[in-house]
Length: 362
Ligand code: ADP
Ligand code: MG
Image 1 (cartoon, rainbow, N blue to C red):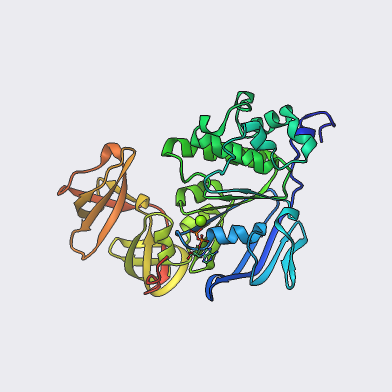
Image 2: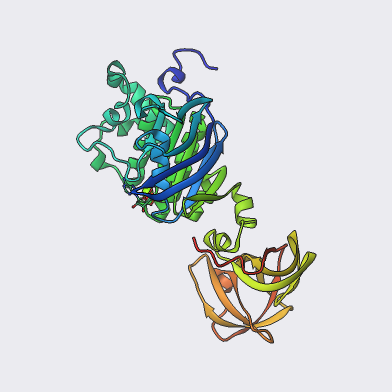
């Protein structure tokens, strides 16, 4: 620990606190929006929750911070129970910071006043404190005197995070914080915000409908579907081993082919492929398009459609001699034209689901 007088006094480090949620449920007008939600977020880590629009993401954050009352379940932060049977600790006593979707800065206040807004009156005049908080989110002291309308969207988001971090919260909640930003700014702001959260030692829950955002930011990623958490895993596990075929399609692009598994291998239109997890019988094989590579030899196919986004392209290929189409992700410089004949290889193990598991939709 650094000594008093250093930046620690100015930017309070969050008291590391874990989040534990059990059986959380909420209905609106008799319609369940969330049911049986269980979460374990270790202190200092970031859980990203991915879900379609209208899936209950904002509702979950509002339950956590106390703006909304739960119908069922418990919430504990750092072992302190905030929600349970007959218990609803009010929002202002939860020590939870909230970064709303649009940043929600006060337009008539300076950046410094916005950042210090949640602090006791005496602390609200301490410009050095605002500057230290801005520094923590990667903004220079020059921003302190500006008005929100003089900031870019990404800068506003960072100010909003600085404001949420100011009181040294036990938990920080972020509601689709980057959705209003353009692609270049989004990546930069993500990196800045992740670094600021890590430096503050904050436990955080971020909700988003953006797969890349969830996978790149979360230490763990949870997927919310139909009001339930269908899977919580590390980004790698979620991408490589999604719980079902619908989830595989939701988390990126997926090639799905019928096949027959025999333990550690599966036979399908792409040949005999090794399995990531053992399976037997009729299955649906899941292969990521980046596992399918154009090669000198291998299975023959014809290009039916070629997508191109600069960096790479998604190429739809009809396999010769089989009634199957697959998508291959190809580097942009090597995207073949429609109608050309190519040869394919598959890299790495693939996944198999029991046949017909892929009918559910996200
Ligand atoms: P998301 O943030 O994932 O887009 P929300 O949590 O905002 O989803 O909403 C989930 C569902 O709950 C939606 O169908 C929404 O219309 C409904 N809902 C949210 N808040 C209320 C409310 N206060 N009263 C009634 N219905 C609500
Ligand atoms: Mg929302």
